[in-house]
Image (cartoon, rainbow, N blue to C red; front, side):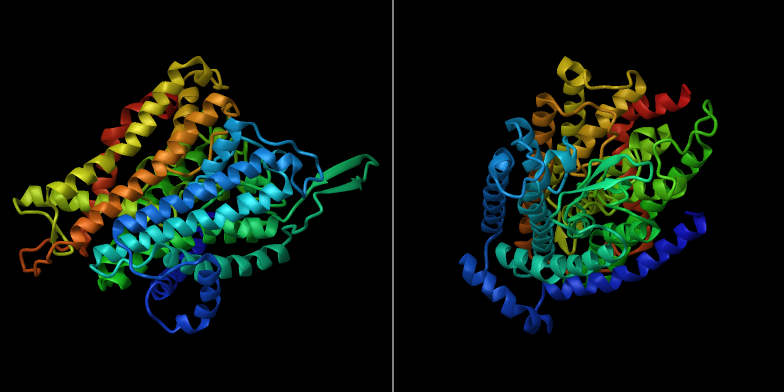
Length: 546
């Protein structure tokens, strides 16, 4: 891939985002779409016994958490019992308890961190009835939470979690995934329940080729910002990513929902300029990361000249590989088409930085909520600078809201830094490092950060298929997912109860380029103050010692 091709792809992707955002706003509002989808949704409501009455924010959260926990238990049992369940032509045994726990939490939290090799660690039944199922449920849950959050900020009725969840599945995830699965299959991605093909090679040797329903898996993997691979090497595998066309479509799908949410937000609350400001701020941060990453990787290793293709597929090249690495970490998808462990120290740091900030679009739903956390922090900072009581959407940000925001802001750094310290201190953790020294610290930091940010990608040089790593990352994934959703919805509910103050000439405009600049500065300032020491000890130290 050339630089010109990368720019053209970004432009084409960008053109689709606003229409998708407006469509999403229509999906979760009363619109003409209701006539088309109500008959299907009513069947789901009757079968599931869903009553569509309004919920309080606490009822909304309880519904979400109980629903997710029931599914978590269901898929855990599938992983444990997969050895005696159908669709097991390779006779794969059940997962051990720690790995089953890690995998169930991973896919329920939209992380898709995989401490197993996809094609040999799971049966076809587990891949479809558990993994594929959760790759719809997890982004559907996050999208429903984000829409509830947006409604509260706009002082609109919160709605019902289950109704919002069903709409996200029926009106967005299922139709787009169906169309894209057909496209991927047409482009060469296999779709079959025949797990293996026994063939004779040109040299006369016998070869066993593993296959499966990859086309349907791939579509929701990218659209839902899931990222888990059907195969162990993920989108570097020719069955998951056969050519340049499938690679571009995967990039587009990763962007589609999280980058469209700012436009949906602006439409739902009636302030489209504010949505455009949010989108612009995120684009600026993304472009900084992308340009810096490409520049760093093109230079290669100053010691080992000509090795910048190490760990990369020749069909994608250096630019295509770095482009994918930055997009997958910016959108918290976690799919990979290259080995991140072989990226140059600075490129690896930028991919890591996307997850540390967790504001460069972020995953579907939850990432947008994290961006709004930084928006309110930026509003508070601006209020302090000018000596005015900070207000967001005409509602004052007071002690209750700021305590919840400060707590939320600290959750991810605590999970990442404390988790990394534990892993580096305990022999069961640091014994997994394959490359001692600065790079080894980066391996551990990346794994913990990927878990806390619900990204799921890894440096993959870490021997993390152990009880210690399964339990540690499982706990971090769970806390990293649900704590911020709970606290941010509580903040939005607190603001919704307040009476809006009419804006005046002295009010802070949060739809202006000036505020967008402040927001971008807040992203980097908070990130630098929190994580710079860890980065200095890891990728930066590795770079300066090459």
